[in-house]
Image 1 (cartoon, rainbow, N blue to C red):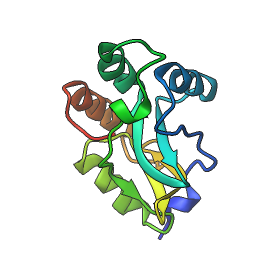
Image 2: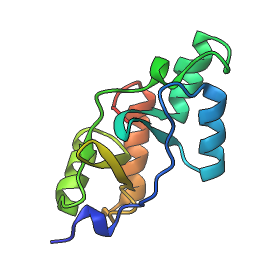
Image 3: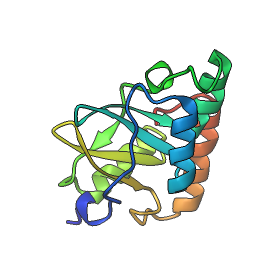
Length: 140
């Protein structure tokens, strides 16, 4: 069976818990991504999405003063490099998430999307997930 390590994007850009909104937004823009893991001491402690920056971050104050630790999602759904692709796709659909962070011993190894996994009807599934996330549901 196919494993996540065959489909994941490795070398994922990350931030640390003390990075401010402006730093995170700049990294997301440079990498053309909508989410960024928060890593301290080589361990993933959460994720921040572009939506988190706008909805949670800007509402708290100045982009220079709000930190990743103030807005990150800590209890994230993750996979591991040796996980079967089918299992990962089911987890993503069950939890209504469009991105799955791939960890090994709490260290970020990569990220996969429904499209990366070739999920049948990935665009429609992702659209449904995005719709649910927009309602405030979902994890990352």
